[in-house]
Image 1: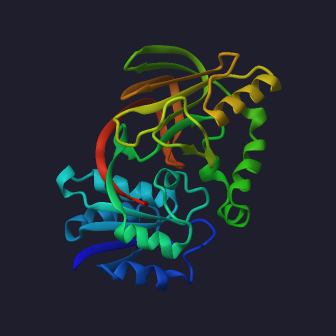
Image 2: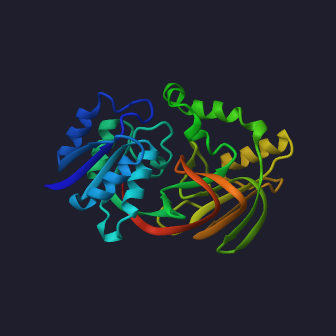
Length: 297
C-alpha cells in the first residue's frame, strides 16, 4: 500500500475533529498505510511536512487554512520532485481555500475525498522568503483572523470575524505605496491590499470579472484607497463583496504574475489568514503549479 501522513490540528475551528478521528482514519486506511501526526504548536505542521515528505506519497492535513498553509510552506522548502500530493480536510472557522476544491460536507466524506480524490496542480505564492496558498493581504481588517480570540471564533464562527471588524472602522489608515506589477506601476495611498488565488476570502464568495484558475500562474490583485465618508466605505464593501469595480474609483483590481509592494514603513501582512510579519518591501511571485492538491468530484 502507498503511504500517507495524516497531520491534524484538533484545536482548529470549533474543535470539529475532537471525537471524530476514528471515522476519518477508517476512510483513510481503506487505501493507504497511514501514519498519524497531531500538531503540537505553531510551525509543527510545516516542520513535519518538510522533514517527513520523502517517506510518503501523500500528506493529508486536517484543520483550518492555517494548517494547510503550514504544510504547503513545509513542502515549498523542498525541490518540486520531492513534494508529495496534499489532501485537505477543512475543519477551521472559515475554510476559504476549501471553497475552491469542490469538497463534500461531512468529515467522513471529506476524508474519503482526501484519500481518493483527484490530484491537480495548483499555484503557490512566494512572499519574500515565505509562501502562501491563496491570499496575502495588508491593511484594514486583515489582522482580524489572528487577533480574534479563539474562544470567540469557536463559539460564533464567521460572525466573530464580523463583530471584530466593526470595532476597527474608526481606525482605518492608509499607507503610501509603490506597486510594481506586470503591466506597470501604481503609486498612491491605500488602506487595503489583497493578492489572491481563490474564489473566497474572509468567508465571502464573490464573482470575479474573470474566472479564477488555480493553476494559471496569475494572481488577482485588489487595492483600496482610503474612504472619506460612510457612503464611500459602503461602496468599497459592496465592490469587494461582488468583486466588481466601484463607481467612485476607490477600488483598483488587475491580474499579474508577480509584483513588488514598497512602503515608507513596515506594513503588517497576513498570509492565508495568519500573521505574516511586518515588511516595508514585499516581493510576491506566482510559483505556477508548485504543489498538487486533491480535489473533490
